[in-house]
Length: 169
Figure 1 (tube, rainbow, N blue to C red):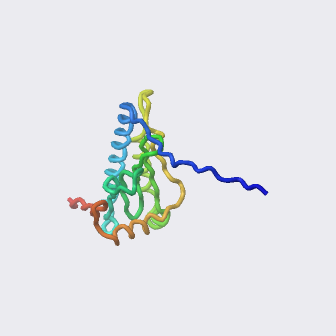
Figure 2 (cartoon, rainbow, N blue to C red):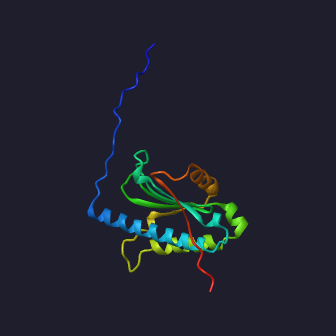
Figure 3 (cartoon, one colour):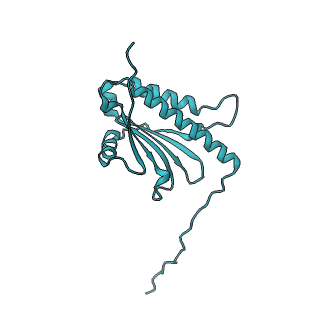
């Protein structure tokens, strides 16, 4: 009886050549991510309770374990993640927590999604970054992830902030 022996394969590492065009596109995705985070923090000012105005930013570039993740914005309601794909292109993932929508309604999430589509839209027939936005239309347990990050406290990669409410006139 003969048995097949498995061939030993060497692990392969795939490198992606980052061209000036790819870098320019990734810079545009980074700008869109920044605008989405700005909109999310603006939306948090609507809450009276400080806990709902608190958010976490994770800088994955300071963690050598996370080679594909770049940055995250996490609050009770949303997780906005900037990543690099295997193809070298940057992507933005937007997750939401349906418990938040059930409790507070969908208005704020709708405003955030509207902004996300707006900042990733290509105009005037240019090559855009629509590909980069991945709105995850499945429920995600964002608030428990948020609680875990805040429980662990601030680190080299995690910062915890609170949005101030504008003064009433």
